[in-house]
Amino acid sequence: MTTSMVEPSPASSTTNSISDRFRAVYGTNPRTQFRAPGRVNLIGEHTDYNDGFVMPVAIDSYSYSAISERADRRLYIYSAQFNETVEFDLDHLTEPPRKHWSDYVRGVAAVLRDEGYPLNGANMLIDGQVPIGAGLSSSAAIEVGSAFALTSLGGVTIPLLELAKLCQRAENTYTGARCGIMDQFASCFGRQDHALMLDCRSLETTYLQLPPTVRLVICNTMVRHELAGGEYNKRRESCERMVENIRKFLPNVRALRDLTIEDLERYSSQISELDFRRGRHVITENARVNEAKEALQSTDLVRLGELMYLSHDSLDRNYAVSCQELNTMVELARNLEGVYGARMTGGGFGGCTVNLVRIDAVSNFKEQIISQYHAESGIHPVVYVCSAADGAGQSTR
Image (spheres, rainbow, N blue to C red):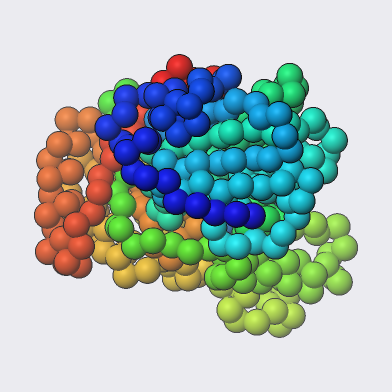
């Protein structure tokens, strides 16, 4: 990989379109351009890699990609967010993770090549609205948008489910984060005005209408989380260790999804106290997601909000992936008018909370949460009022 800086002016944020930015950087028009949404997870955290249930919402905050062919086997990628260009040889992509934004694009290209999909040399530009390190899946949005762009040059259309799986594999292999399928799936299969409940084992999906009387308000604590190779992977190893130990007694168990609380208690002597608490979170969280589905279907927003608070409390006390700033944000939301529920969203250790807020209370909620969080933490948060969006596809931006 070679890296170079590009002067800020060619692709500055004042440029109106991705096409304009692409022309400023590369001197030609892009052949195609795409957008892929980030996601917020309404409930169901750290359950996807345990074959469990999740309820994400694709949001109207996107990663954009534009691309045109080159005559050689080089891949040039310019990031408007980082004002940086990287260059790869398409025949030499299998380097270890560098903890660099380009790992996401390089990983997708490597997996596509390994699966036999045709890859052409290309000039590529990516730009994103999804905040980085906020738990809103900016990485999956980049991966999915890059996969669409790279395959478009070869005239290949990959089924969406296969594309989501390829992008998940790219993140697992080339960034070091052993994520489940949720993020890439939501970016591909999101639907306007709907949450989707996903069974991460069967990949069966149920779309759930979000009531028009509420908004999803995302509060960014501005504490950036770092998951790759760290605490996130430790949680996954803990879950796998529990399954391995309990499988000696229950051979049909494939993942924590297959256990009940009674099973966990019965075999608690076979696992550590720390692992027991983590297992308790996953098992009870799966139950909460199923109950949240029923609450949404019956428009019982009070119960849905209660489940969100219970989810956050378990993530904090059992799974230990919250932090002081996330807890502060949730506690402030509990006391504000018009808030049904709040919880941390994403992998944790920082990032954002998701809040289910009555539509007429949104303006006051924003004002109060910003001022109160700053008074408590000394940090100026960023608040986003989001709409549920469709999944990835071509863009004319």
